[in-house]
Length: 414
Image (tube, rainbow, N blue to C red):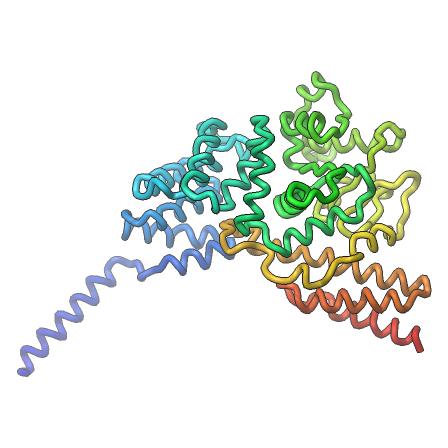
């Protein structure tokens, strides 16, 4: 090869290299975008998804992931456009129909084009396309309540289990939540993973159906409040006319007091007067500010805090703690807490953390039993907590505290 020919070839390589570098964009992959997305770094994921779609507009999967990222960032107009493009490319995409359903759902946030009929249409299309996709079933449950489609509520919970969307560990947590509650309790929950698992256990196993599970976020909706009154037989502290007038307001400290807060505070007042006969409990996952006006009356019982009359009892309710733990095995909570099919980065990142509530309840039980001189029972629950702490997906969290309890137990048994 002559020098002149080699020079031309090298010059061509340089020219090609300069041309590719002039775009100012490095090559990106879907896996790279999904890595940011699954870490809930949506602002970093978005430009990568946008670049992927710009380079390959005919790829429906890239379009739908872009749509979902837009939706989670509150860019609902962009989400709808991208989801519709995905459906044009693949009319059978359950994922794309679910994005459209959630973006259009008035319950999930204000938007000028929100429409419950649009939400319902696309939810039905989503399960028609793929009934094994758990995501639409998650939304269908709430919409079924809204529309009075009560048989569909039960079906939604069953499909969440059958599809594997609710995992073994999540369902074990649901049973643990219910197990120690007093009969006919009203249990206020916080989010998806302390609401759907116990509800699914009730539906599929018939376990503790006497308990009324009330999601505090949904309780802001009048139709949901009427549902728990008429179907779960939970007495509301307001009549229909008063319920219709409930609106959010700011208190003297600037805190926003939502309808859910007002209903719960009215229940607390009824409890203090002996009017509300059913036991009232709040899941441990609910932030303290929700029940701060009655903090002295809320007694820790592991999965929940139970309203207690009088000035309140500062010590945990050991009877409820042990009732929830008895018959439960640490391996029940092993394995993933969130299904691989779950597209929520929030659930993927944080759901596994709630196992700490179970481990902590076993440790507290052991500590209280040791104080009562029941060292053999204390050792049992210390070892139980140790096994759970080591085998749960989250990994060891309480090693130091468990070790201290085990040392105290060993010293007491000498």
